[in-house]
Image (cartoon, rainbow, N blue to C red):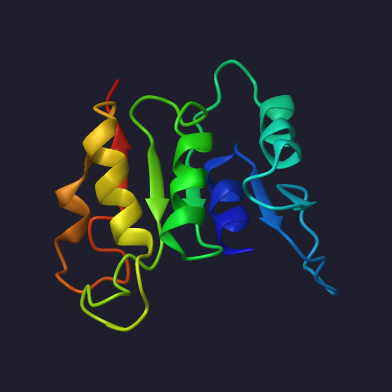
Length: 145
């Protein structure tokens, strides 16, 4: 609802939220579309592509399964959907000792590092770290080309 209310203030935009399980009593808002699917499914990606208009700015926030494998799949699927100048925001890159939950195992941070090593279309936007405390260190990936 928060993002939808911000879009109301801007006067444009839409939120597509993807969850593997249907959630009862979700808030209703004309700027929110709920998709019940895996974030790495063809259905999820196709829903976004079908809704997209030529002048849309697409920002993606990844916050589902925090395993490196899953986040890596999401990054590969959504990298082409995000518009140049916009972002993929990877949530919870702080886990696996970055600096919290040191026993988590490879997760979002490791997926980001691997992704950036192979994709020069994105950079870490260091300006998003100005407050020094974040659940998403190095998680603001700006598409530059």
